[in-house]
Length: 340
Ligand code: KG4
Ligand code: ZN
Image (tube, rainbow, N blue to C red; front, side, top):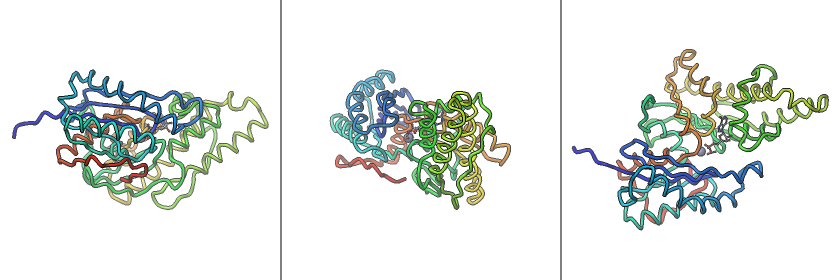
């Protein structure tokens, strides 16, 4: 069989990042992301502002992705886009744009589930990065989701555990807000934690049955703890910031790893992958690596640029679906609560 030359454009606009990427036979040629700084002032994503910024960014971002890949839009074989889950107004921008472009170029349109994409990002061809073997467990940890997924094949996935309240990214971001850090606070807590003592302060871990998670109690515990300490010493946060961040991060990672251990025990699967924005965290990356020695896991940690929201992960799913000829119709609609 002659090898086909397939170019797919991936478009991601589910939350507050406008992103586009071109993939050629499984290899990324470009991966462009425009972050929306505007939300920092508000301490969280403002949906109305997000969709407006997507409107402004999408044409230049797609243009740049094609330019960096050094191809013309006429060379594209298909357009893949994030159908959901995410913010409706944000999803609509990417969906409408993808539909129009596919229609104009008369090429197939491919709808992609954002959470599947965080998992399938592991199948991008990258030197030095192994691809997981089926079945494997994927823990998707982001600003909107916290799930453990049993992945039996590319498109056969079962959610076997998930959060019953906040997502783990929210636990980072809301803790950061209490500490007066900018949104999103995850990356900053990670940085500050590296110079702190993770055992300096103890926070009780939630007791949740089975493979589900809960993070809202931790946020409240941190709030009360800080309020109490500030009463005794108004400079408490400033004087202990590294230790506080290290302790919060340590607790969150313990919660995640405990559930992964249980999931691995219950399913007998030792191939463990992580994905989503929080998988950029240096502590969770180290904990997963340590799991290879401690629990006999084979761990898959994504390349840094494929952790937070990006379009390369949308493009790889587009490529896999293209090979299956699994295309969307022009009347496909965005779906804010799309399930895996
Ligand atoms: O996957 P993502 O980019 O967007 C969603 O789909 O939600 O994830 C964003 C989340 C934010 O909550 C952010 O604080 C968190 O990922 N995050 C981190 C780190 N980098 C991003 N959390 C902890 N440590 C990091 N290094
Ligand atoms: Zn995401």
